[in-house]
Length: 276
Image: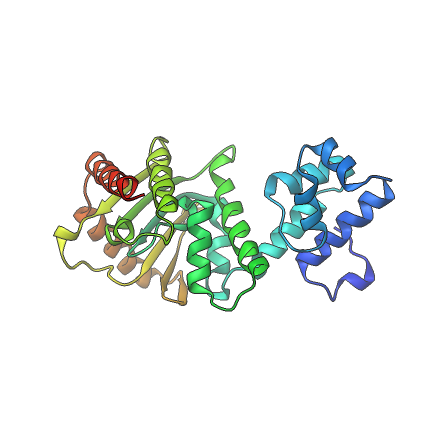
């Protein structure tokens, strides 16, 4: 991937937009003409050109193919997404696509890889006061793009243990919560995705107040990410990993079996639907 000499001072997002505009204009195409050729709204492409929004993975790939750009846009997108991920989690997130298995426990939120766009947006709005709408949208797009790993030729096995508190706490717009719970149920239809709920009736458990991600890599190794509030730590030390795996196993043993977990999700879905 080659960059123009004046692009090294730009952010990856503005570099991507600038390069897109340069290639489009060199090809003698208007925004509308390019949009018609690759099958995306011209308004969407315009926002990408202006650096207001990141493209989806699919759009980046379509641009690479159309302009024969040798994965330029895919690489710039990956760079831009890296800048939106907290330093402590960047290493682990980068390895998600290489994982054979992803195990996640969350104590108060729906796991990021299973979130809907509207649910994620409300989370970022609540957790990032002062950010502009464009900044929030960039974070949402980055999170949604991470979910493309489920569409890979060899997707990982994904196992989520979710505290019931995540189901109980609604979004501001209740319709977003109904869509989110429906997304959980549809995700669980996949033979590669398991969703279990750790119910309130189990009282205290060893994972209260935080979240844990365990990645099993293709070389047999394991890496972990422990998070709480706005801080976290990537872990690969064997002794600490054994402790974290044990905590996850205890939480899993306390969770409802998947059929009962899905029934509980349906109960909450019905409740939010009635309220809406």
